[in-house]
Length: 422
Image (cartoon, rainbow, N blue to C red; front, side, top):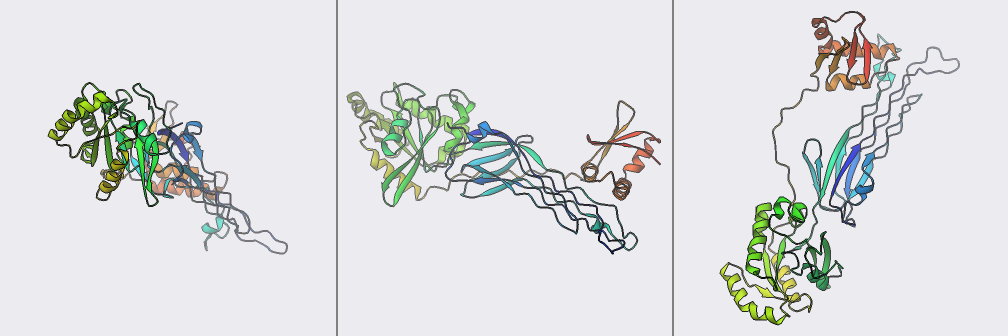
């Protein structure tokens, strides 16, 4: 089954918690702090696997969550770091942040990788907080929280040559005739309902990868018919073969219509090298019409239009060699590039405080919420460290300005509820 769009959820691993511990050994008094650091959480990585050609895997699995790092241990033992979660994707996968629409990457090369979520750093054990004034710190850090994202994946097939034309022009028959591909073929429109790839071997040293794109109709760039979902698959092709249906009432009108749809979807498509071929020349009525059709095509600026028969397999090899010739000077396949957009950098130390319905105070901010998640609330030293942070960030003074009193509830993000005490 061919799937060329997918929406998935990814989350990296949380960093392992640092350990608060003091060395214990017979005959050793007052063993110093020896809590180990936590291990690093696993990254989530997309990796190109050349043997894949569809996103069908993501139809059955939509959540990908990396492992967390392990907690630190005694004797300064660092927790085990988690393995990265590597997700295989086919060449031609374009990755977007589904929430913001931001382009994250365009994966085209074999083994190319993209880190979409970074694993959290491990928390520090209590030896990091020892000082000459505090030689037995009960302070430690929990691991850095995980990152998570909703991603949208789009697949754009990578091929040398793209076959375009109206429904029933014979594109599937052409592909089957010149390659080992076995697309569905029948004498009615929209036989092809998904793109097909095939490899044509001209000789031992020359091969072409061809993509058969479902037939285009008027309005396809707006999603009408099979729509623009398939038009993007020819964006990466370097040469186009435009097949005309020799039995169409007006092949010239079909030719103009397809060119318009390509230009409206992406102006770059109309600039690609193109070979125009009238199909079904094995039929007597088409042979009779060919001289006039050829004359009109030349008048429209088409260079060297040809007549072929995909069914009878006549005139096919010269077209393929012409493609090889055009590929020598054709531009490289399109790679999607992010458009630079200036966005003011968010201040990680910024915060907001709002009143809640129960009379409490809700504090939100990247730095303060992250610090709360990394605090060991059961250890007095860690709590004091958090108190010092809210003073440094200006949260404490702001709460006092808003009239906070003893016993009032302070919410840090959505996960922590504290009671205010002077």
